[in-house]
Image 1 (cartoon, rainbow, N blue to C red):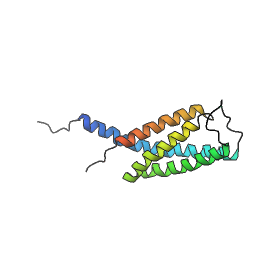
Image 2 (cartoon, rainbow, N blue to C red; image 1 turned 120 degrees about the vertical axis):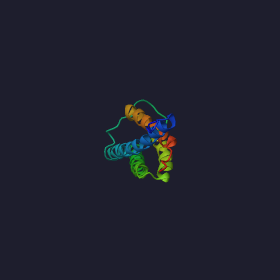
Image 3 (cartoon, rainbow, N blue to C red; image 1 turned 90 degrees about the vertical axis):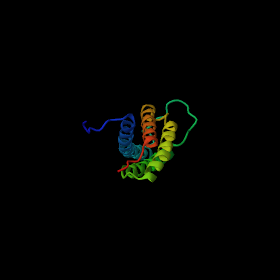
Image 4 (cartoon, helix red, strand yellow; image 1 turned 30 degrees about the vertical axis):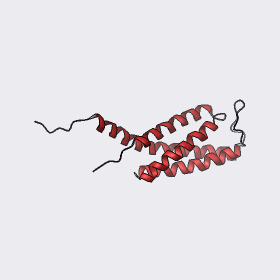
Length: 137
């Protein structure tokens, strides 16, 4: 009998979830950095973004800039906590990513394609953080 470890569906799922959590932390840092850039651009140049169509959430672009800037900073910090494998970071990541997704839904009239991509990234991050199971050594 050989003593090769068998790959069970449960261990494969845990590996995907663990790798997904690390990837989610990296995605949060990158997405947060993009949100910071979006915020700075919207604050400094109101003419950069043009609203497409009529939409319920009509805020001044400077206001949207500050919203994106603050959310971006928080998302980057939370992503760093997730990479440190802290339980509090994972829980905060779920909450903050939910806010990030809602903000990008409301940001749709200004950058529709990027907002849809950001919402998809957010959904993946939420899934990865919710399915993560801590490693036992």
